[in-house]
Length: 414
Image (cartoon, rainbow, N blue to C red; front, side, top):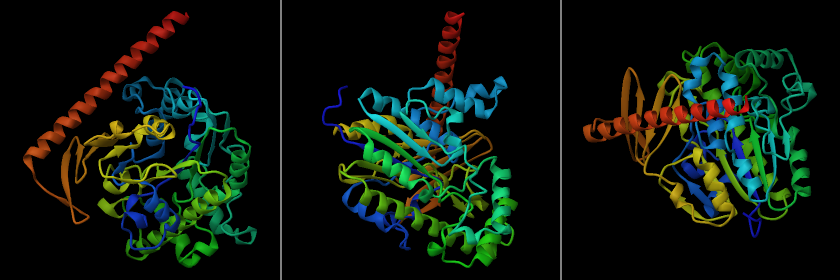
C-alpha cells in the first residue's frame, strides 16, 4: 500500500497499568489528568484486555497478533528461546507499517522487549538501552538520593527478575523527541515505559509517602507476592506509590504531545495490569484476574467515541494500520475476547461478564454497578466452557500448522 495520506502513529505501552486506576475509567484519584483529557476528546476502548498477565507473553502477542507456540514447551529450548523464535518467525506490527511505507522506530526500557528477543526486527531505529547499567544509574531525584537502600532494592529486583527495571522516561525522552523531529512522514513510533512497574519509586516531587515507608513496603514485594509481610501496614503505601508512578507517567503524555510537531495518532495502553491484594496476590503474572488483564486503551488525534465491546490487544497489528489509514475498525471487535497464561489459566471476557478457567476450578463473575460479583448462571458457564475449548483447540491447531511449515522450510534448506 502506498503511503498516501496516512497518519503518523505513536504507540505508547505502559508496563503494569491497570484500567481502574485511571480517572476516565472511574478512579476517584486525580492521577491521569492528561489522559483523561485525551479520553474525553478521543477514542476510548472501555473493555480492553491484555493477552496475558506478564510482559513476555503479552507484548509478543500484541506485536504479532498471535500467542507463543504452546507446543514448544516440550522441546527443551527454554522460555526465552521460545520468545526469540516467536518474534523471529511472525509478521509483526512494525513490519505491517513498513509495508505501508512507514519509517519505524522503537524506544523500550523493558529488557523483555529488547533486541535479545528479536524485537528490533522491522524497526529502522531501535533503542533498548541494554548496554547501560540501569540499576547502578537508578536515581529517584538526583545523585544525592543514591544510598544503600536504593542499591539493595535494585539488586533485589535484578535477582528477582533477572533484569533491570529502573529506567525512567526522562532518561531517554530527548532521544525520542529528537527522532520524531527528524523522521520522515508517515512514521510509526513505539515507546515502552516501565515507570509504573514495581518497585514503585516515583521521583521526589511526585512522591506522596515518606521514603521511610515506601522503601520497606517495596522490599516486601520481593519477600512475598502471595503472602505480603505486614500487609496491613504496607498495602496503602504500595497503592499510593503506584498511583504516584502513574501520575509521573501521565506527565510524559503531556510533555510529549506538547513537544511533538503535528498531530500524530497516539495510542496509549498498558501491557497488563497489576494486583494489590486481590485474590491474595500482589504484582502480576500469576493470575488471569480482572486486575491483571483489564488495561486502559485510549487513541488520541483520531476517531472519537467510546467502544464498549471487548477488544484484545492482540488486534493491534490489524487495528492500528486501519486507524492510520482512516478505515473502519469495527470488524476487529468481538463479543468476547480472552487472555491466558501457561499455568494454564484462561479468562473469557464479555462486556459485563468474565469467566476464569483452571484445570482445578472455574469462576463466573458478572459486573453490576461497576462491581464484579461471583454468580452461577448455568447457560453462561456452558457457553464459556465451550469458548475455552474452542480457543485451546484453535491454539493447538495453529501450533501444529506452524510446526509443519517450519519443518518443511527446514527440509527445503538442507
